Length: 246
Image (tube, rainbow, N blue to C red; front, side):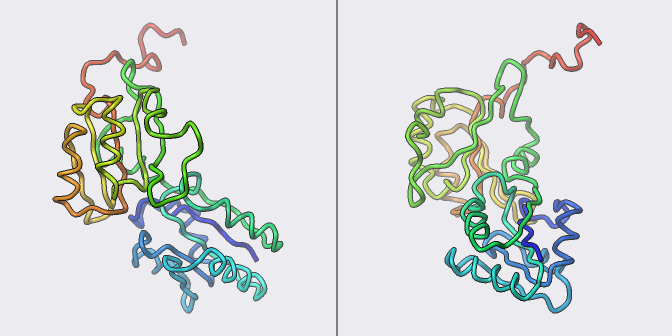
């Protein structure tokens, strides 16, 4: 018996990896975050599968479900939105499964920032414009940020900034980032990327609060800030350059 931690991607079922699809189809127990995982994804579960929405469960209750499945000899598909490597609350679950002696493996998924970039039809790294992507969040109503990882510090490095789990505090976010990037820096908000009801907002950084309020976006969105979003005049990459020795 194994707990399969699965990156369920941004939401569209056809953006699941083939491995993720097969693991879901073979697991008689499925734990999923109903806030982000769409109902149609659960149709991949085998007939009679136990489906558990973890949106309102405590960590201890989630782990109890996985331990109970292990004791019953049942594989578990544990779905997390986006990719497991960032903001998935995975570390604390693995720590508890280690203590309980429950085996598990990890299946990566399409991360939210990649889905947002695809919707925006933009590369987040552009030659001479931006070669660094910073993935972060704000600390309001969440676990405190470590020292040195505040927005003011992180934005000084330049590049492209992608903020998860932060759109509900868009005014605070814009105020912090504007101090470095300036109010006219190109910015965007992408909510529910890849879904039929996705929402895309674009404009200068200072315009985001009003746009977000008007659209009623409070969750399931990433905020992207940086000159790469509007870059037009830049040199071709050296990767395919005629001058590169091959």
